[in-house]
Structures are given as C-alpha cells and as structure tokens.
Image 1 (cartoon, rainbow, N blue to C red):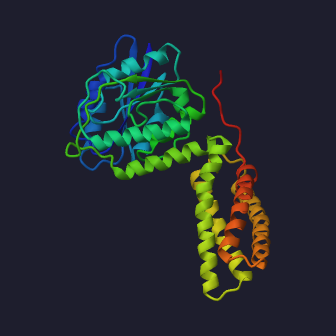
Image 2: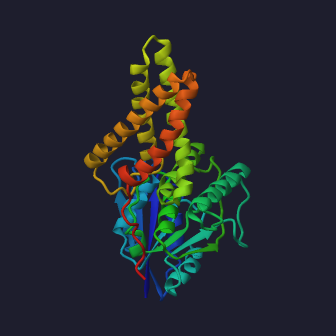
Image 3: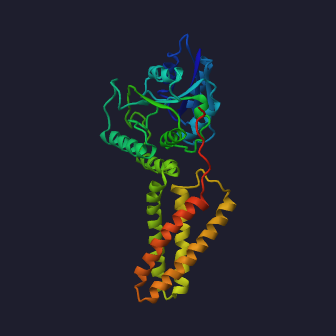
Length: 366
C-alpha cells in the first residue's frame, strides 16, 4: 500500500476545515493509505477546537498547533517535517481544490517517473470557477517570470497542489513563512535537478468575502522570492546583468553622496572615500538580498574580512582614478561616473569569485 501524507495549513478556516478534511479522507482505498496532518497557525475563530475534534473522530488525522501566527510557509514547514508517508501533498484548508485530483497527481510518483508533480489550474480541461481577471493575469505573470529564471515551462507556479516524494521535500530547506513558499519551492526543486511533472486539475476558487487571504503584498513578495531563490543559480552573464542593477543603485548612491559632500564644503579627499564607503555598503547588502550568500562557502567572519580587503582595493582604485580624471579638467560628475563604471566590473568579479564563492549545488542522486 502507498501512504500519502497530506499537509493542511489552517488559519481561521472554521467554516470549511471539517468539510475539507472529510473530502480528503474519501480518497483512501485499498491501495492508498492516508496520513492527514493539520497544522493550525494560531487560529482565533475556533478552528483549533474543530481540528482537535476531527482528530478524535478520525485516527489518521494529526493536529499540530502553532503558539503564534507564523504564516502558511511556516505551517507547511512544520507539517512536512512530521510527514511519514511515501509521498507528501499540500492541501489548503478551504474547498478550492478537489482532493480526488491528488489520486491522479501521485500516479507519476507511484510509477517512478517523477519526483515532484504540480497541479495546474490553467492547463486543465476540468471545471473551474470564473473569478478575478487581475489575479489570473498576476498568476500568469509570476509563472512566466519564474519560468525565465528556472528554465521550466510550467503553466501554474502558484498552484497549491504540489506533491513530492517525501525524501525530496524533507531535504529542502524551506525559508519562507508566508505565500512566498510557492516560488521558493519551485526554484529549489528546479535547481536541484528533480524530475518535475505537471497535470491539470479542477479549481473552485473563492472570493475575499468567502475568506480568500492572498493579496497584492504577497504578489510583490513572490516577485522578490523569484529573484532571491533563483539568482544565485543563474549563469554568470545573467547574474552580471542583475548585478548591473545593484551596481547602478550603488553607483547612484555614490554619486549623490559625493556631490552632496562637495556642495557641503568637503574636499575631494573626504568626499571621494566617504561616498565610496556608503555605496559599498549599499552594494553589499543588495548583493546579499538579491544574488549571493544563499549558498556561500565562507562563514560570516571570513566573508566580511575578504569583503573589506576587496573594498579597500577597489576603493584605492576608485580614489586614484577619480583624482586622475579630475586633474585633466574633467567635470566631477563625469570623472566619478567613469571611475564607478570601471569599478563596477571589478566589484562583480570580486564578489562573485572572492567574497561569495558558492559551494557545489546539491544534485539528485541518480
């Protein structure tokens, strides 16, 4: 018998939780056993009590309670860590998804053809409720952007229905606490070389009046997560293009601080290094935020030491090149822009190969 662990994150779903769990339980048969793990994320509407009652009624249901609200991603992290089945599926606590689709989604896993199967709401001949145009457009845009970074051809990256071999999902270090879980997990299964399948599913979406929780803020977080979890794995040319954005932001800071200090009466001996230091810190934190550090080789102390040495070297270069151009009667703006552009290339190479050298990515054992 195949055992499927179904993780249900729950936050204030008292109206649908019991019906959802009971629908899930109907998919069990003589060849499919279930383990249902309900993780209540500190609900305040009575969902916890309902979950406990369900667990008393059905022995295959386990309930885990969070003492404070931490988000969907955190609830999934907890539930996945407790799963013991051959496969692990994610099921929202509402009634938007039909659990009977899970029996189809696990077929490629049972047959040994897939490591991960995603259910697509947009590649399906099944019924689906017609709702928000802008949500649909936003989902397709996020999926398109994710596909660009992962080199996958998914049609629905944001889908709830994701089914994994248990050893696959339990190896992944899940960081996101809210709805950023979706782009994070797609990025990580992609870059670790797992076999990914996609199948159409039905969808019965609900309105905000009916309890839908995801909003525009989560869309912006998804954008950030797509960049954050994919950028460290991009080819160097694409990584450099992203670094141009970071370098451009730092260069703008460099220029503004430099001109501000000059207008305030400071000489170039102070304005140049001060502007450079502030810009270097801006560059460093943007690099950590968007590109590097996610699989870095060095510990923080060694990383900072190497960074300081690199900044010192580039700062020395920046100072003397800027002074050299100023002596040719070049305008301060032009002199600083040229020095900054040259330093940009040196900065990227130094950060990529000295400050943030990556460990070898973990690959799937064949």
